[in-house]
Length: 189
Image 1 (cartoon, rainbow, N blue to C red):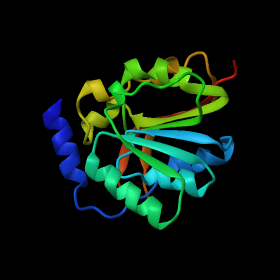
Image 2 (tube, rainbow, N blue to C red; image 1 turned 60 degrees about the vertical axis):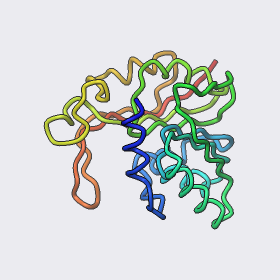
Image 3 (cartoon, rainbow, N blue to C red; image 1 turned 45 degrees about the horizontal axis):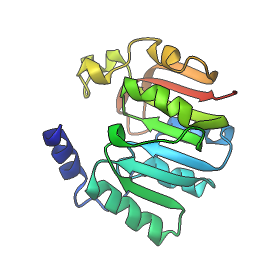
């Protein structure tokens, strides 16, 4: 909805850094073939910048103009191959078998998962890392629409080869905590 998009854009306005990449993304990057990557709901591009530094060409999509402006400035200053796209991911048309990697962190749109799977090239990887239903007891988000049930992510990725999968409490270096489901899966057909 428009109010949520406006709030999201305000959250990013004036921020000049992209932020720290999600640890699971950094951990899984060595297992992903280099090529064209899609970072959906990219925010200011913390994971897109990490992917570009690791040798990927990145298309980063987010509905926040402020976030994409920050990402564009950082990518340009570091001469990294990142193409920021301001778009609502629901409106984005993804061609089949286009991407070598798709990154989905802290975003959950269940109906989009089949489209993402189709957008992977043969041998392409999809990395999912988002919140479990247990998260509602300790913090944001609390809306069940944005929280995975236990083992739901494994079911959503059915038809792909599951390379890594885990669920549980993640404790970050700054001691914050989050209940997460994380997976890396490869398309083999």
